Length: 419
Image (cartoon, rainbow, N blue to C red; front, side, top):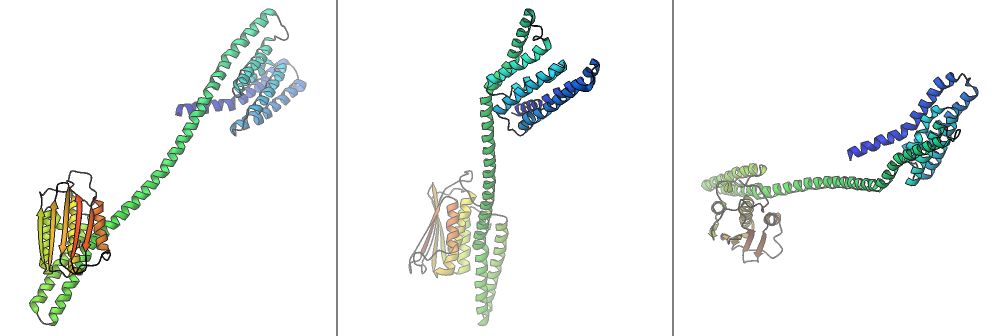
């Protein structure tokens, strides 16, 4: 296509330049050599030729050059220009044969005539005018000369006219190619716009996902840790008021542990790492550590059980289930007023189930719609699972998460990066 475009540019340049070049050469030779060599004065022939040259300049400028540059040349005006050009050439050749050079421009302009039979006719007319003047056929119409003239005109017309015919036949295909190129360029432009939109949407989605991740991490780590610190310090304050030093020191020690743990989790969240417990062990052991630590801190009996055959899960699955257990235990400590909690992790082969049940006060259906439960559902939904919360006033609460058992080598899970 690049070669074709270059070829078209060269042809357009020749179309524009040829009449001017041939007219300049003819006029320059006539006024600098032919007219002085004839011994004639500038008047009257020189003046007449100069006038015809000036008319030719205006005719070429307004009938050929400007329309081609502006791409406004039409078949009708092109035919009129060709007839006028040939008439000027024939008239100039009556003053000097050197203007045969200018007449050659008719062959180039014949390619612009439409339909193609007019182009071939233009080549024939140019050949007749050119060779008739050069061979002086009209002055001496001898049979041999006429035969030679007819042969030259025929061969010349056939040789140049075949180019016009081939060009005319290839024009529909060229137009189709041009239309195809235009459509392709439009499609590329549209695709570029769509690509830019997709990049912007992906960037916005990535930023939204990161905001959601940080919000969940802050809620699951910092917010819960700070809440625990406040609870322990308030308990220490109450203990100090009744002068029970040992209990006060115990509450302060718990507050320090929570503060250090929250700081560690904050750093891990910023680096998009899995929770500390999962960094040291797989999910069952991490949940057991979490449950035992929570039971010790809250003074609530908690039991952790694992059923089924244990198998390693993808980091995203393990992190999501761990966060569900963490959030569920935090909610029990805050709201349930429970005396016993049971955490069960079940491997069923194709799925993994996590259940956190308590015997607390429970709540009415539709009440549990805080950020914690919303974040919990979003986490589990992100790895292809779902969460169910069952509760009733006075009957405790059960949180059940069900996720596919995706192994670490499976690319189907999406979520937080692991250890």
